[in-house]
Length: 354
Ligand code: DAS
Image (spheres, rainbow, N blue to C red):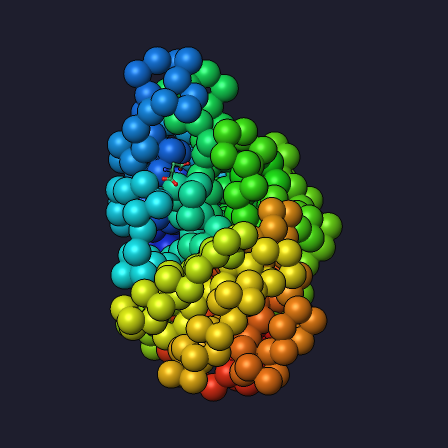
């Protein structure tokens, strides 16, 4: 009796396995599409710079790379369809919550976010800060639309799905897969606006992906994802933080305007070592006295390195320094950190640790 029951269970189980789709043994990867050039289309194959971003839907992006099905069971969701320069804090929160929800699902092994390249570095850093998972999250874009000769989007997407499907990509924080390189979502930024080799980290890539295989050379040193104190499930609104650019002949107009509009912090995108013009220092001290945080970053190209009290008496002024974060990344961290604390010493700790 028992034998017959067990053999019947075995038959049912075998039958069930036989009906599983062919990719049952493959990792499950979800592609969240937001727009950008990777979804762009130009009129001619010679249009590598003249095109419309955010046109091609996610299912067409996936259909355009049939090799994806050899790597993973891939499905797509169209979260937004916009050029990334138009993304807002609200878009970031919506995307972050969707990524976090998918990461909690047992039937999701990795997530790819297709994204415009203009603010890709901001979104990648944001997800790195607030999504509590060690599953691979890979942000990818392209510098040329899929309609152009030598378009880079197909291979970038193939690489990104490979990385998202790979166990060895777990626990490395949010990754950016562009131009065969794997960069940390924290470190990488768009350094060039007209070449496929556009994204670089001041501290170098974490690795490379070649023909579907990842080669790792270093690991992130700063806190991220599972080791972050921030959780997108507990964040609904990011703090208003603005960026004011430093340059010769600068005035305090922008800083005052931002403060009047309710900025909780102003990122000073300073020259050199986060330097502040003596024409502006009194205003920044006055705004700090009114409760606005002042965070010194640097707009030098290949990566700033701002230290406390080196260029300005930060201790005396109660200012914060952004260390190696460029102004746009400093804005992201401040917008997240200010959802938890308004204490300047705590903010500085957070800027050292993330
Ligand atoms: N406008 C750019 C963006 O959406 C296009 C791109 O490079 O992706 O970020």
